[in-house]
Image 1 (cartoon, helix red, strand yellow):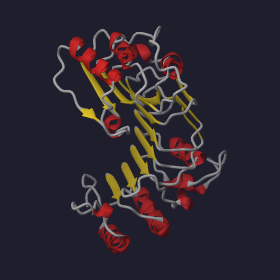
Image 2 (tube, one colour):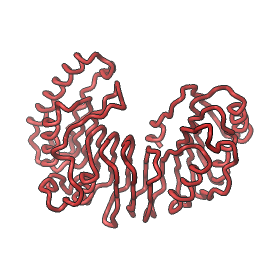
Image 3 (cartoon, one colour):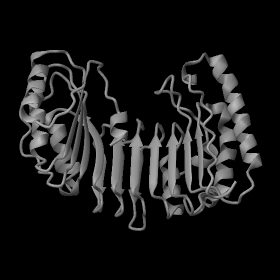
Length: 345
């Protein structure tokens, strides 16, 4: 297999294997592992452009996955994707790869595993894989060519810093990490940031090229103002795409007043608002976001949890009266954020 070819064992049947009985899934897992091993054994090239694993695998496969990772690193892989999410139960975390991907903070330079992460790595995607803060530091310090880092569903990350003038990182995506308390980002070449977590510890510094941002927060006025005035203050004037998820309002929150004194977004071309309301808010105030963007080309409103209440009707009426170029309205009565919208921004 030449460098231009890709080892991509996507062996998931189209008839939705994710919802099969456990017994059948276990059988298919064994077949998948055997098949991947055969692909690896037959690979003769010294380099590998891409190595991608997408299958629901659990703790019992951790040693096998460690071997797969060692193989990909030994072949100077440029893009590595490990997605072992349980799609039939997305909130369930898989626990393995502890040998390679967990590291005590402060041990980066002394740990022999630093040699596994080769300088050729340009893109790294981990979904439902155990990682900790030390492992992320290891990757960032030893992959100077890394341009894309995506981490979903890692339950051991707590305090993360993605910082350094040397970083070539252009795309950073963090989602579904429930113990993450703080995330500091200082990356001069970063253009896209997706953080699908509702927490107060996001800090951005030295991101002069950041133009695409996706974040979520509660829809009360205080939370919204904090996103604009604190979190995005260093890049709000340069943003071209903003995806904003508003959700999880409580009866005691201030959801009735107007959202005033927010900074303008003079370069914003695309605005996506995904709104998950609880039925008691004044929704017409969402129009404020449109007025902040005088040169907006595209506006998408994903409105979840539609009740048909008076407030809901007011918002729809306002949109119809003030968005003359509107081509489509989709009303989703299901009370849930569809975060895939953000990942496509």
